[in-house]
Image (cartoon, rainbow, N blue to C red):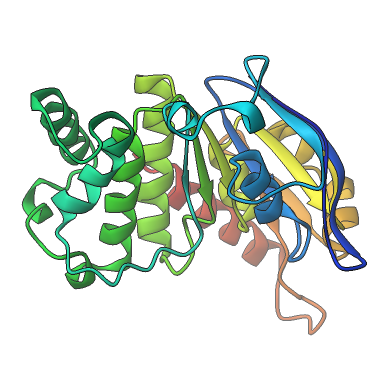
Length: 277
């Protein structure tokens, strides 16, 4: 388990993360949701030590991450940042191989190649492994980056908005892969995500932030509720339970063009697309 206690971050006089405390349960998907500027990305950047904290502590299995050697920490947690820009002309396989650096220091051994092969197969990248990253679609590229985090072989995987710029089909594929990582490999995944319906369908636990603080934390069924989400997002949100998942409907119907049947059809479409095997 990861325990975060009273972490804070300010830029000048603006406090972007205000004494946040939370727990991340092992073997689950935990989603961080909330409006823009809520502090989601800043929180996981501090938790993964990409960003210095002003105060507070982060414990992994009781160990303070800020006293861990870099190489030791790289074998416990991995992070896929929101933006990944590589100027190098590298293939999918070369990119995935970077994830083995904490173990190989650039000198890949047979065991490293075995783990790389397994991740490429797992992410269904076999036909693409010799292609250059800049030749891939957004969904293919994102799968390659996730494969790189898999071969790092950490128990905890942090993903900062991995669905950015992906259409629904590719977003569904990525979320299904994350669920498989939890189910088949016992990974613990922490994801910053904007789409609350994806969070509702694929998460186990949800932490909602607002104005740099934790507004609410709990299971997805405890958090995805009309009164809670309306307070967090400051807008009207209707919820329908479809296939056992709470689907949020938040488009504007003030013009009178949206009927109840339209809303139900929308909810069923979202649930069906996101839950397809």
